[in-house]
Structures are given as C-alpha cells and as structure tokens.
Length: 195
Image (cartoon, rainbow, N blue to C red):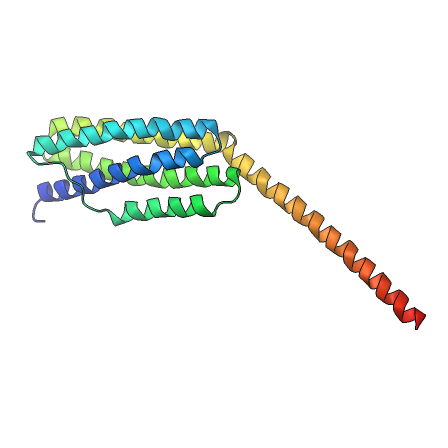
C-alpha cells in the first residue's frame, strides 16, 4: 500500500468481508434469541445488511474494481465469540443479553470502519462513495441504538433476574444440604451416646 487510495480499497475489501460474514451470522442469532423484539431486530438488520453489501458493490464500481472481500481477523474473532456464546449460554435470558453485547461489538467495529472510509472518500473527492458510505454508517448507528434500547428496556433486567433465581435455588440447595448434615450429625450423636 503506497497511497490513501490503496488504503481505502483495502479497507473496503475488509468491510465487504465483514458485511458478508454478518449476513451469515444474523439469522443464527435471530434463531437463538428468546426475545421476539430481539429476533425482529436481528432479522431487520440482516435485511439492512443486504443493502449495505449492495452499496459496497456500487463503491467498488466507482473505483472501477470488482467487489471482493479480504478476510478480516477482527470481525472473524467477533463472530467466533458470538458462536461460542450461543453454544455455552444455558439461560435464554442471559443469552439474549450476551447476543446484544456481541452484536454491539460488531456494530461498533462497523461504525469505526465506515467512519474512516467516509473520511478517506471525502479526502479523495469521491462524493458518490461518501454518500453511499454515510447512508450505511447512519444505519449502523441506528441499529446500535436499537440494541441499547432493547438491552436497557428489559433484556438486561431479565438476565439479572435469572441470576437471582439461580442464587435462590442454590440457596435452597444449601439449606437442604445443611438439613441433611444436621440429620447425619444427630444420628451420629445418638449412636455415640448409645455406646
């Protein structure tokens, strides 16, 4: 890479890979989500992401290049983290809270990338590209805001309530165990006295 144009093109490839990876991940996330609102948010964002890919196709066309992705280790890691969460979370409410956290990590990555691409496109006098990239950037910001509203509008609270329920049931188990130990001690004490 020798020029800002080269840097712009390489980052565009990175984002193209990211958007296509997200397109594959979102339906899985929607399927795993318990909350209907969260399922809907993931489904809607998958539809928006299809539009993001189309806009990136147009930016590549402006550059006179064929659209192609370049593997992005950062995004790949975020997707793997999400898959790990989906396989490990045992509580649906905790999973929903975790899915929002993972999705927001992806949104913040995308917002950073699109913001940078907008600034570089502006510097390179690519007005048409700026317009397309800014449109996607605004949608990414809106998706992030919606996820925040879902998290603070009840999903985080439900995940915490799940934790409280588990603490209570663990407390019950502890009480049962204490009772069993007392019974054992009483039996042992009676046996010792009998001797």
